[in-house]
Image 1 (cartoon, rainbow, N blue to C red):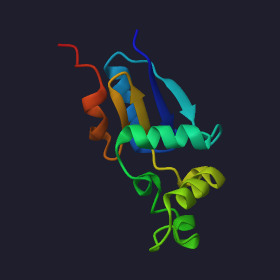
Image 2: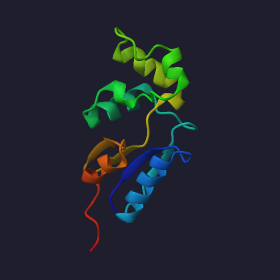
Image 3: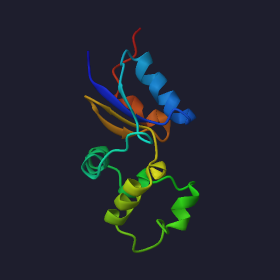
Image 4: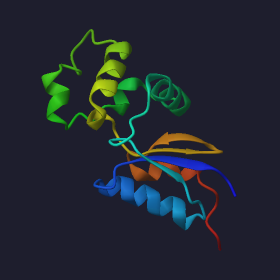
Length: 121
């Protein structure tokens, strides 16, 4: 059995779709409801680095708090963005999926397909 993890918000339809994709491919992931159990700084840093995407991609721009904190402004550092994610987990874009084949931010949900095992015939 392969190991996989999903940083998940059950209220998010995209996150639910990603979880369904994992299960359709025979994976039963470790589910981290990040609003209840937020990742620490080291975990966030590792997830983001493994994804190959910038920190800014992991911020929910649609959250009012994003604008209130000025996180899209010029000069905001990755460290400041990580600080915001730690202080306000609801700013974390989701889902984040980790499998033996890699780490992906599931926006769009199709972005996770290349790290899932092939579909059964």
